[in-house]
Each structure stands twice: as C-alpha cells, then as structure tokens.
Length: 343
Image (cartoon, rainbow, N blue to C red; front, side, top):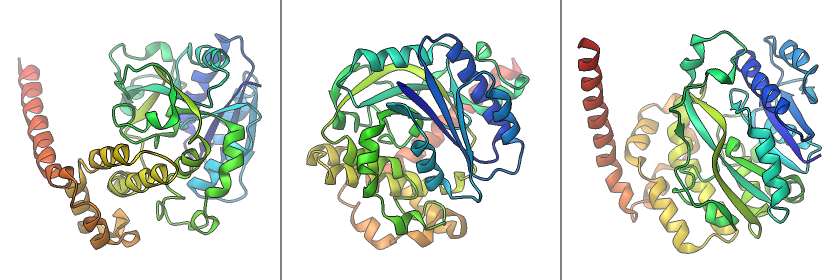
C-alpha cells in the first residue's frame, strides 16, 4: 500500500465529518489503494458514529483509546497504525481536495528515491464552512484561497533545504504539510524522551509539542525531499482550542525545533537565518507569555535564558516595530472595509 492518511482526533466530530467526506470524494477520483487511520483519543461526542458511517466508503483502520493519551502520544499512536509505505498526517478539521490522493500518490510513484514530500496547503477561515450543511462538499470551496507557502522552487532537493521560512514559516511544524516514508520514522522514533512524552501538561516541552519535528530532524537528515507547490489540502484557521499558548509554541518551541535540525546537520548559517526569522514576533509574544502566566505556559520557560539567547539577533528588537506595523495595517484595512460597507 502506497499511502496511509493518519488522523488523530478528539471530540471534533463536527469537523471530522467534513474531513472524511473530503477524503471520500478525493478517493473516488483516484486509482490508488490508500488507507485512512484514525486514533480517537477517548472522545465523548459522536466521533465513533461518524467514523462507522464513513467505513462503508473508505478503508478505515479505527482505534479508540481507553483514556486520553495526550496530543503527542495520540499523534504517535496513529502513525503506528499505518500500513502504507508513506504517511500523511492531517488534522481532523483539514479538507482534502478532489484531486489530492491521485496526484500525491502519482508524485510518490514518480520519485522513488524521495523519502519526504512537502505538500502545500490552502488556508481558509473555519467560519466559512458554517454557511453550508454538514458534511461540507469541497465543491463549495472559494476560488481565492491563500496558499500556505508562496515558494515556487518545485522539485527534488535535500531535506534541509525545506528548513527555510520561504518554504514554511513554522519549519515543518504543521503536520498537514508533510508526507514521509514510514520506515525512516520507525527507525528513529527512539529520539523522543519518554519522560517528556509522559508529561501530560500541554506543550510543556519540545517532545510533547513537536514530536514529529524531532523525529524528522533525525530520520530525514540525509534524505532526498521534494517540494510540491500545488496545494493538496485546505487547513482551517480559527479552530484552535490551545490559542492562548500559541505565543509559547511560535516564539519558544519553534526555536527549540530549529536547534534539533541544527544538531542533526542543518548548516550554521541557515540556522542563524531561520532563528532570526522565528524571532519576528518575539517581544509582543514574550510580553503576552509573561502577562498571562496562568494560561500561556510561562511556568515551562526560563525567561532570562531565553532573552540572553536571543538578544544578538536583529529581529529580537525589530519584532516590536513589526507588531506596530501589523496593527497599523489592520487598522487601515478595517477603515477601508467600513467605508466600503457604508457606500
């Protein structure tokens, strides 16, 4: 089997039904044999019924955990279920496009020496789907969706060439952007720290925040990769139960992820370049973390050490002005939108 689409889920039945419907439609347009793996992290809504209904139209391997394993362990569990040579982990709120499975499987077949594929994505506000009945039909997607990556450097390259903000601002943190050879993953899963994974506190360390990135850094450090600029799925924005911890993830954990890439062979200058970019919102996000200690994850960080490790980078200082500029731009845009509504 060439591909397993893996979906970790928990109490998101209203989104999962849309996700599965989009896979059903995409699978109908494909000549390839694929599998869908779903690890249910002990949901209490009607997730199980949604999955059972979809099993008549999809090859679904379903497992419901006896208790909530936490995000990271459920993430690892669903990959372990996969029988395909390649794994594509998507969110339970993501949508596949009608042509996605056929084109992705053909891409994998056409590049047998490639271990890692970056697949681009469209972005769409989640509230757009509220205009339609569920399950949502992807025929109703708008025509003007924004691409996650604007990069046009299509084709084969070394894996570390993907670690570039021009390719992905979150350095492969978004799981829905990566399709990878499972055998490489299995051979390197031991890089994860069991004690860190067993920490049930949300995003308390790198291993329970970005376990996939830590594995990627080791498993594909010597691999050939492929960048595909054509979006193959739709990522919904605004569906984040953990939004209060986004500053921690963006300005702290992403930099820790970059260190993993550096430890496994990312060049020094590319690391410096990427870290400077990652600090582009540091001051506003650090202020948020400090002033919202109860919900921001402040207890997990060493503020002085983080500041001292960042002060030599230009974006540490420029991040404040970037923040002001973004606020000003939003204000101007809202004024023009108000004027358009009045006219």
